[in-house]
Image 1 (tube, helix red, strand yellow):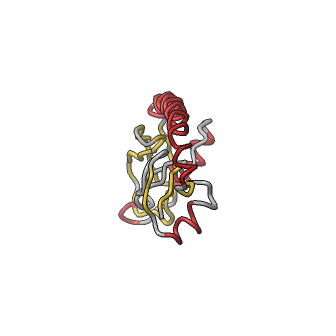
Image 2: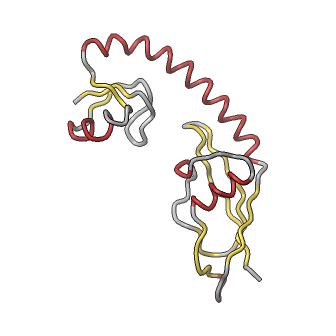
Length: 148
């Protein structure tokens, strides 16, 4: 089934692209979430007008992401957690913890945009990438220290 994407979809395509997907994926995921439109003759004609709109929207989103990224690059976060021997944490620092700490500093960032492959379980200093936009990725300094 052919779908016109209305939003960027990870590992599938970008806004305004015509992609081939399984019918179930389109019917159960893309269409209900308004991430795509079915590629009918009328929608294909609308695609050209939509591409101009998407280009403007893309430019403004990228500019906003770059401005936010410049501010975010100067931020450093510090977490204190209980730890055992060998500096192993009893818990962990997750993307949700990072998102909440950033919210405390005035940055509203969705935790899905924080690219943390696995939770931090060892004390130390880390660089955590935050994907603000498809082309704008900023590293945030995170320090995990032992609770006294």
